[in-house]
Image (cartoon, rainbow, N blue to C red; front, side, top):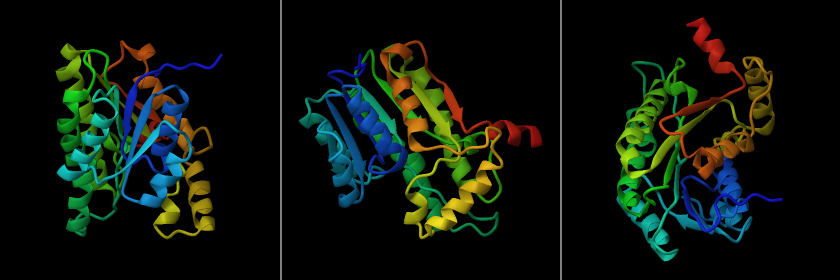
Length: 257
């Protein structure tokens, strides 16, 4: 028998046109969600994900901006005005050594990864079902176990981890839960979209797998199934938790430190 834990529920997934976000949106739709609003900045990618399931509603918006948040809120209102799940998945990455960090790239990263979640949560929280609503962040092991050359990204994810725990405490009296997933190496389209050839990505992930105790890297569906589980009614007693999924790589880094 097919399970439909999100029957008659409405969901927002930011950055949902590709990768983990797309897999998550499709999982919610397949599990019975009445409407899954997916945000992104590319119309072609949004059209592709919308074609995967009739419950998916594409919204072209930069959710790190007030106007983008307003566009998402308008879409929620168009579906009836009530929201059950908010998934903060949109994010960007940058690298740079201390003393040589591109400040504009750093500003953009914090705008999307940190301030964007604040802007959108401020805008959508009044619509989030209380009690029973759920917020799920997509963070990273770097948020608690940073690596060299990724200090700005790690700092942004540390902020997301703090939001997860702080907002879980603040919103618990309203019956709203806040949790997060922290995926490690997951192969998505982002690498090719940044100019890497497929064979280069193959080599990158082959090398990455060597640092993973289980010997394999992840795919978007490895993460999306846990996002939906954290948001599901069956997880009603779970809040303020950050679930790392990386094949055990985080354990190795922690031991080395």
